[in-house]
Length: 407
Image (cartoon, rainbow, N blue to C red; front, side, top):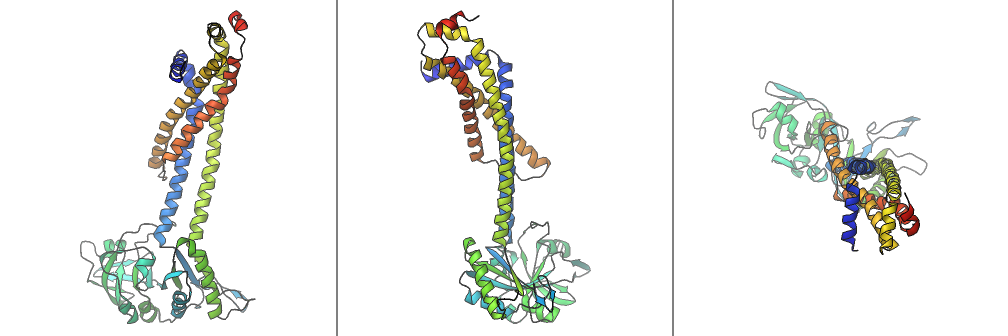
């Protein structure tokens, strides 16, 4: 008998007791649905983390002033004036793994336009003309300020979408003059929408000005708070971190027994750590879900053993008219695989529905990939083979005479 004929016999045998077959498949259905849903949540979380990190910029590193130890008193990042624009220039000039650099100055203050006022939650950021490239944040309207604006400390600014909506509602912000810390600034551009960062902060609620303007006309300082650095590639961020650390230690005359008066934060490391944590949790939960599949496999083995006992006389008759033991074994094995395969396909459907429901009700990002579907179906088939082999072998090893005498 060919494979298709054996498969049809298996389907008829299973359809004789539909309820028992459905209950037998229940373990496989729950197991596959759990695997699909859990892996979907894990992959959705991983994709969300990568998306949020990508929003931060191209292969970003932050060099922060501070982390000093002076006179026995330690200070955190941003607490001491240890970085200068010359440090930023040296990083870009002398570190081969660095692609672009932008000095950074932070400030706070009220924004006023007409009778409207606003305090940006992300504050006022001073930077240079390379900011859109480093942060992968293009201008949606107007233009970004130029190197000349930075050199001359021009009073120009580029605003985020939240500022435009709240300060210039119904008006074109480009070309308007707004007051920042009581100083007039001309709005020359509006940034594209960035959304919230991974800490839930609205990135569009910000104002960008030349860092020289922030230094000289807002804060009256000569130092900078940070340096934004873009490495030549994602794999080069660790090398860039080492090169920057060595360079700044030399420039700041920091000896071997002294702590750095700066800190370098590699956002690629943060992304990799977050992604690794997400994958570990996904694998852990998927392992728990696979236990359900194994329990379902035990259920299949139990029912198949019962089926062999119930059909012992039928097996004896078939052997008596010439059926070989291999055919008997194959028939019961196909019945077991059919049970697990059909259960797996139904479980895939439930898993996809569960992923959609979780995404819509709990607002968790989910991503069901073809790989997870194929892997779940293949694994359910393997469960059918593993747990169906012993009952099939038992049926094939029956003695025809004893089987015919069985009542």
